[in-house]
Image (tube, rainbow, N blue to C red; front, side):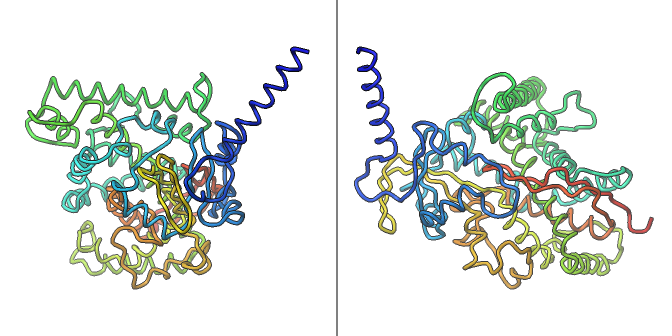
Length: 471
């Protein structure tokens, strides 16, 4: 009898918990949607991989069922998902007033609790200005010869190999460029392979957050610990043996740390270095790999790209001269090609914010403290804005000049948190395409599948054989 009573009471408690979980309180009308199961929410279907360039099934199915703004729950957090261009734009414009940057605690653990994406107000602006010292227009102008040299050296080496897995190879190439600029890292002479630790880190970046030996999440956090340990040791070495002149971003950070009135802490500095290395390692390499895939599949785009870059070389007094900043800025079709590539690549597939106050928008009420997930892929694949949105068509950008984000294009984020490294990514992509199409030809050895998760997308196992044109 007692056991039956306990069973009934327990069942009632479970029913009440589920009811309140699935019907959260609001002072108005919440967006439609499902909160899933208590704590777990809809986390499992959200993390399901997607094998196409199309919207993830998770978002697409809910858009069809609930409309462009809907609610869900992920890893224990109530979240409003926005695929609405107007609401996305409103969110970016109101950052610091009605919204602030936010990420789930599991992601914050991975990227660092003091990473630049989790900081707000004056501290965020302070770090942003520090990074602009590295990726600003004048710095990029000076970096151009080094980017071209590194690209040419890697392409030459790859042409002597039987085949190259492009995602892995381009990631290492870009890491070498950024690592040298940030921390004077030389992969050829270093006793430790920082790049390998980032590979381990990335494999578990978007995984179910179970911290137990053997799980992807555990390996991810271990990879982060190893990288931070290396960065901390480098910082200590710089402190004990300071350089006479600044030679990299690490020297600049150290100078800031040692200044009298600094607000920078060692923890924030290390997290900043970690995030900058990660972003350069992962995102641009994916975009370049996808660009090669599009070149192979769209011969007319390849033809026009080659014509543009061969014309640049013909206009030089000496064909062996390197790229100039003026030549880079003149690459009209190249920028159209890059815009279309990053539109379909959706490098930033989800951008999170948190409401600071109760929000009323288009008849819906979003409570204060709720998370909001902006979904750029839904904007970039909107058939109302982009005719045949899954079709690669760089000519759709003809006559359109992009200066930052807009309601219909947010490949590099938007608002005050527009990606500081966007111009650096474009420089790397443009230089790679210039060196690649003017000097080499290639064939596909193994075409990789597109594999997407909410935070990572990559052509898996995309192998090519590279030949010098005049072999």
